[in-house]
Length: 570
Image (tube, rainbow, N blue to C red; front, side, top):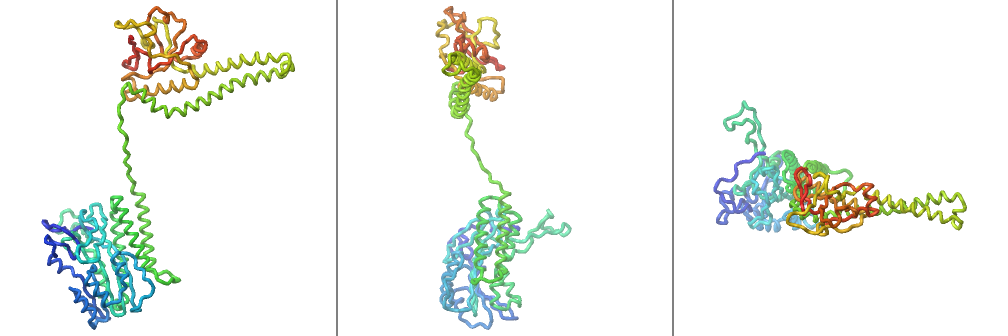
């Protein structure tokens, strides 16, 4: 499909309603009014010439219906539905008002019982697409502003740039034994101010046959216009084989099927790019085909399906296959807006841990449950083993003379087992251990030596410490939670180099009998290491006094390059 040149420059479009649009003064242009007539009559007889006569007014329509024409068959074609023409049709012809109302509303006509009148009258209506071309600014439905009951048909784009579109029109046919009436939409492509033109078949020729009209040698816009339903109907009725007026309904159905075939071929070349446009287009197509299928169904059920009914069902199946394939090709794009990442300062580390506390609370609870089961097993295991051994002699049975041996052996074993389990649960915890004031390298220690401007007492040197009792469930999880911010901060800043205060162990082990812990006023030195079995035993027997830090690292800690911890005086 190719686009013809649009309206001439300088033409201002106010409306596309009526016979071709209004000019700046609100009146119709004379050329457009002459180009598009509101009605005409087709007259033909068997094996005779075909005649077409224009009806310029409602009075001419009245005279044409009342006159006795020598032609055997007559078909009155009404474009749109002007009110004065409608009055003539209602007055002279026995047309059901519901039939006209269904045509105006573009709905299915369902007759209410048998009407008195011409028993040979037949009716039918079909929705069909007309392939047209227009600019993207005209991809919408307009409401007529003239004295006409029919609104303009809906236009849907078929190409990416909107130069090819489908105009969904309505054709309603009412025939009697004498004449027939065909109600159609206004052919907007005949109005130059509408900005709509008929689509054309593309023509490809060989390079050797090219003229001076083009220099690319691929395609020329020299094809014929795609014929409209009116043109096809007129051409078909001029052939002698269409002699009977009763064949007009069958001819109209065949032409409508041809229009749908043209539409599906154009749709397969370049489907709409927008998802919204595709949904609106396919929904319109499905509604139109379903209305045509309902119209083609016979009133009385027949043993064999009608061919035309099968044709509409085949088109609906074709539409279903095409939409199924299109749904797999078009992937919906979902935009996910991520919250902005706000950099946190050193003082925000506590807030980070608070936000993670909700995620780790469930893990802490599970760990405590496992610890309770472990301690219960530590109590029951010695009792079971000792009772099994002593049960071999009746003297150690309950009520015997040596029964006290059971308790004398079981109680120390239970206590020892519980201490071993407790020591095993805390031996992997990283703590700051108090060491001697000399002999420790800077890489392994943190010095809390007194500064030149501060001569505080030893009790004031560690203001951020408090006594804490280790819990086998809380210690490992607390240690892991304090290591995560440090790892994430090191990854954010290149790994080795630390910015701000890194997270360290949350506990210190102060020696109860250390010479530096006295009142000598000497500075204390600390070394980070795992508590271990020996440290766990010292903690149990209070050789180490475990204290919990208020902050993540002991006082005086300052970060250094390459991830090393330096010393700083308090």
